[in-house]
Length: 307
Image 1: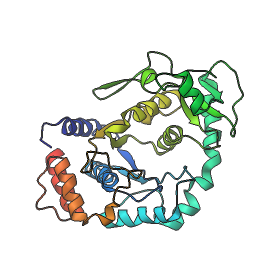
Image 2 (image 1 turned 30 degrees about the vertical axis):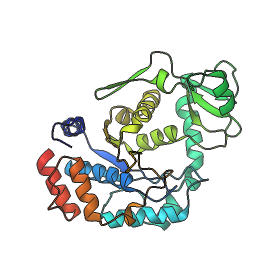
Image 3 (image 1 turned 90 degrees about the vertical axis):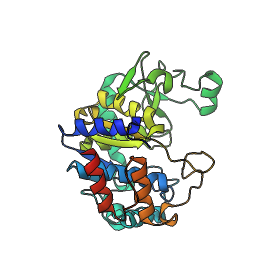
Image 4 (image 1 turned 180 degrees about the horizontal axis):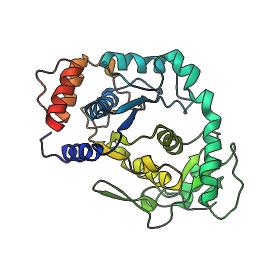
């Protein structure tokens, strides 16, 4: 990637903005599979920015999807982070610490309480009983058509989804991008009918509580970022509402398909040496990679070039 790439320009703008704020970010893996190269490059980018700016880094393991998350994947997260020699300042520091103090199983009720406390008075929440098939039949675009918006159904923790209304002409600006949220996402789900919080809502609550001011994500999550900023504007989350976002290019496999757990991407820890991952990250950043053999080398080269 050349030095004048849009991604590098994003990073330079990010660093300029971060000089004026307390930098707080997070590594947020999901234990629904082994971490692949795309995951760990994202973690390295986040770690580099936070450490170069003297910020504070959380580890937040998102295990809300209880049907897909497994204990061995949690163990794999800690093993992969150790393999990369990444450190963090807050959050779980071991599998047992995570299980006892940070797992969704020990704090799940908190999100429902926050939904009622933070958003119920906005007038934008409504219960929804529509199935995916009903939505597909009623909407050519695939967006929710608002069927239950005026039904005045009571909010329920189980058996009904809870959606948030996104008015027409809602625009969210992130850097150079202006996202028409009503046309790209529409009224989206905050609480699932199976009694679990949707990722968008839970993530915003966590970022509000952590005072997250910097988020590094793949370019495919731009709409997700817009949805979360929309929610941050509805609840009392002033720091996250002004957070700096960087959306990096996606890593693709040899078939030009995004690396993902669902596509059975090779676990990063089995894909080669950590040195190769450091050098891959350096090349993504437009930095000389040949002499990088350690995480400290990568941080030094990054800081010299960007900071």
